Amino acid sequence: MEHAPVGVVIATRNRSAGLAVTLRHLLDLPEHPEIVVADNASTDDTRARLARDFPQVRVLALPSNRGACARTHGVRALHTPYVAFSDDDSWWEPGALAEAVRLLERHPRLGLLAARTLVGPEDEPDPLDKVLADSPLGRATDLPGTQVLGFLACAAVTRRTAYLDAGGFHPLLFFGGEETLLAYDLAARGWGVTHCPEVVAHHHPASGPRTGRGALVRRNELLTAWLRRPLPHALARTRALAADARHDPDARRALREALHRLPRALRARHPLPPYVERAVRELDQDRGGTP
Image (tube, rainbow, N blue to C red; front, side, top):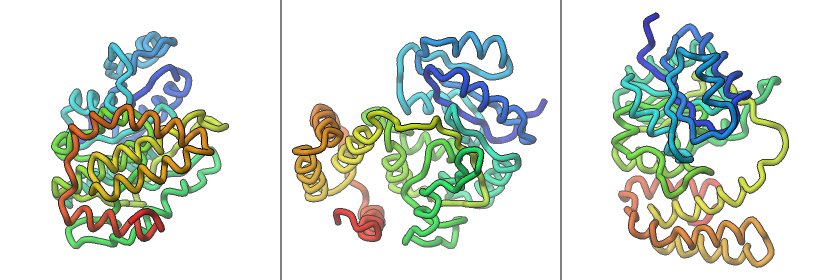
């Protein structure tokens, strides 16, 4: 069977049942993408189930949990010009990947497109869809859709060369809001990042709260500020999180973990070029955040 010019990378850990559902959806796609599962050192039956039930899927058995960087291992393992990301609870609508390929081929500066995401069996729009669609950055003449500086990793398709040029997901963040930094780095390298609602992904997350997720996202927001934003902004974000930490356990954890990683963030610090920083400030002001 001939594969499409787009492959799918899935990072997973200890979620074999959900992964099996995702793979069945992906294997039924008319595009017939090559699929790579980057397994973050699962201790359940993930690898045994993949070998038994999905021998046509390529598995990268990582020796330790690499977090979001597992996706980069998957991208490097593929040789398709375009790569779609799924999580072990998400998949692509039939025809979506073919549409993504058409957009990427027509727009050579497009580095990554953020799809429209439908959540759960009721296909409810993900709240992020409206945020992306209403981006104040507007349209560019050489790009499809609306320019953005954020996306959901489980609903994104990237140009392989652009992803590798930008360095992929940053290892310092591990997981939790890691997409923003990659969007910044793509834009800093001159690649376009846009929201294209004609490309559709489905996300079926487990019900109930995700313990500790809020702290991870807030930690990574602060680290992203120190990695790429001007020093006054990073200091303001640090002071704000420290104030919240006085009464908020999640903020306290986020601050503690961010300060532990701060020396590495400072060593990897590369402020955004002025034109990207201006776009980020426009987004900050639109959200009513720290300027």
